[in-house]
Length: 315
Length: 290
Image (cartoon, rainbow over all chains, first blue to last red):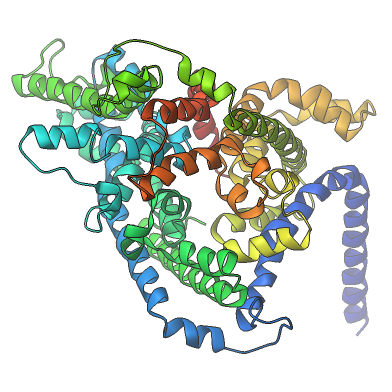
């Protein structure tokens, strides 16, 4: 019994010690903690409080003077609305096209740039391809409108000079999604590439030397050394891509015009139109919430898959 | 470069030579696909009306005039340009202040609740409540139609914050500890000791923020209703797409549109060599995981 009380007393002492250590640390770090306040407040107000406003999805905010709780009514309306399903479908199709046609491109480009032996050309290419990433979607949209213009655009002048018929890409339902994918590529492929190039530059040169001694050729080195070293980066980029896949927004908002709404209205633009332009806040929040939930599921799923196959989780 | 050579020194197989040349040609074409539209914008913006009215694309200048830019200086686009500059400068300053101070605090080695704090910040890169709740917050703060709505809600980029934190973490603690023992205040340490060593990352992040504030479109459209407060991005969108949705209506000629476009790109083009310089190092620093 006496040993028992001893142990208890000792534990208490330890606890007290830990407590006082914590307070000492807290006191010592107070000036630093003060510096955190503005930033943390900003995060709470602009990143976490909006999550509380997601509650509006269960109200009729915006449609009547008095806001009342209406349960799942917005979601019922949502799932029976052709506008919503159209937007959902467009989001999936455009995201899928981006994933298939855009995603592998920076990896391929990085590998090719790494193999480029003409130093001056390499520098020139590296200087040029990142430029568009720093342009706004408005500028990119304007450039594509010009290049693809039906009369005096360079693309259509080439088509007509080859005997084809001029295509009004920006207003053509069968072409507009490709315009979105193409402009996304044009703007961001260089930026995507640089991330992989940065990773490639961290590969230990000795690996290549050793492989050379063992008689490995160019392709073998690319396949067995360069590509595997990009695995982690590819997984991270894929996760970030998937996390934003349903959130494609500004590009569409800037580039679409009424004739192509039917093929390019996505969840975010739909929510924006319903909420901010039509004032139906409750319903639009329901759209946002639905998008956020599906997005989170995708991210968690992706992270699990990465854990399984790469042995490390990304987040 | 040397490491890519295999086989006996100096020997390159024919197949490899063909690959090298076609690779070079391919990458050259890729860069031209990026460059040619930009050249067209520049050349068209400098073309006289008569050339543009012929309805052909212009790649090689046929007469140079600055008329379009003079027209801009006399029009409403100029005040939008000034709005854009003022908002960008103010927003970048606020962004830097918040990011540097928070980044410095987060970089402390034994900070209380550090793990939680990092998660709290990084989680926002994936979790996103969506545009409407975000709009509601700004509206409830009474910021609609105020320039503050373009400055504060977009003030911190988590990516830049993490870059800043990682860079400061890499500064030897002994320097900071020494100053602390000398009785220097935390803000004093930050501004007198940490910032001077962190010039490269500060330059990089300032450029990133400036570009993103300059390019901001969505927030202006959502938060600003008063058209006299519009920035150049919004006016460019209107100029280009008004004529697009009403094809036949009398619209501005292409050369004027391209001149407005150049005005919308000019800060980015001027800063680009610097952005490029810091870009790679920024990403390299960012890849340092903690």
